[in-house]
Length: 314
Image (tube, rainbow, N blue to C red; front, top):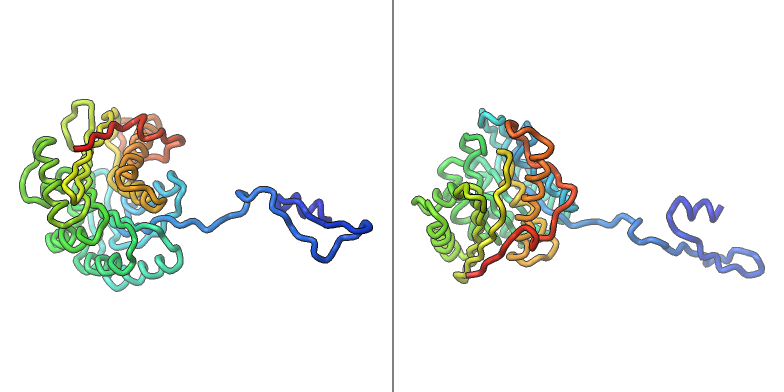
């Protein structure tokens, strides 16, 4: 019986025989500790739904699976969208958003928070108060519109995103159009992107990572991380063919939050997130036709960041 038990549990029995009998203090000795499931601390993602599964919370959960961390979700808005754009946005009441967040925090015990599309000022105010109480690393993806078009953030939400929520976050991850909306002026080239990012990072005293996908189609993507200290870090990596794919910003922000949840420093966590999105893009390109616009696939292998990204500090 002991042998059958040990086979089922993946362990062996320390029976401490005396005169051929099993002693009362017999105990189980674990042969392989990795066989025992352990509670993992992952990421709490607050955002909107996407019925196609390409972006929003669907992309967040998929990214968590890709990096090996659990993802708890809080729904702030329910969208009707596709590759043709956003048809409608149903807003979840602020108190319901807050109740979801408190339940997830107490039960899932996340180690970082990622904030995406919120949809309403009530949700934004609730989330701002929540992240202040939670005292965890926060990645704010200031989603203003869907990839295919259609607003997800009215003016009141934008004001809260770029002030209160930004100041309570560890890092904000706008794309170039979102950065331009933040500063109220165009940033047509890399130098202006770096200057604008440095300015807003100093203003809100929060790191700002500007995604470079909207930059020139010259074969190289440059992501810019501006720190409150004034330092700017550039991440240069190849622009891959294929796409367009939806949910790239969601994927990047969640991968970054996962890095922070795992204890990475911000500069390294950004590099790992860039490498993850690059691998996911290439996996999606091989799996889908160029005319389709699905979300990014889960990559089977993510290379070390130094094999994909060139980091330049200024």
